[in-house]
Image (cartoon, rainbow over all chains, first blue to last red; front, side):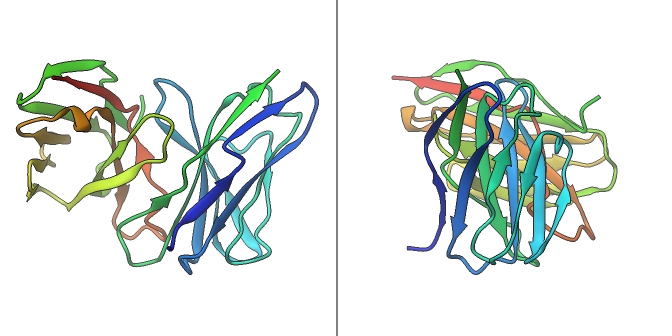
Length: 112
Length: 114
C-alpha cells in the first residue's frame, strides 16, 4: 500500500541530545513537509522540500535540521538548540497540481 | 493575529445532532480551503476541500466558504460517535508553489456521545 511511514511512534530524548525522526514515502511525491503540533496551536510548518537536495525553512525552523538526499526520505533532526522539543511531529507529502497532502501517523517526542 | 482562527472547543454533542464547525481567516489571497479530520494519536486525513466561495457536499458532510466574510464552515449531519475527532481547517493561496504548505487553524475537538 502507498503511504507515508514515520518512525518511531514514540521517542524520548534527554536534555542536550540530538534525535532524528524518520519519514519515508512510497507515493512518488516530489514535495515533503514537517509539521509540529502542540495542543491548542494546530500544525506549524518546520521545513519543507520540493525536490531532492533542496529544502526551505518553514515558520518555526530554529533548532531543527533536515536533509533530502532521496526522493522517498525526509528525516528531521531535533537538535539540542530546540528549547521546547516535546510535541507531536507530523510528516506530509504531496504532488504539485494536486489538492491533497498525505500525512504520516506522527512521532510523539518527549524530553525526559 | 493568526491567519486562520478556529475555536478549539471542546464541542460535545449527542448522536444524531447537526454539528457546525467554523473558522475565520485573514489572508485575502487564500483560495483553497480544506478540512482535515484527525483521530487521537493519528495523522490528519483530508475530509473535504473547496476552491473559492461556495458549498460542497459529500454524504453527511457539507463544506461552505464565504469569501466576503472570510468564513469557513463544516457541517456534519446525523453525527455519529465515529465522528469524534479533532477537525482542522486549513488554507493556502492560489498560485502557491506547493499545496502541502498549508496554514492550519488550531483544530476543534469534537465528541459525539451515544
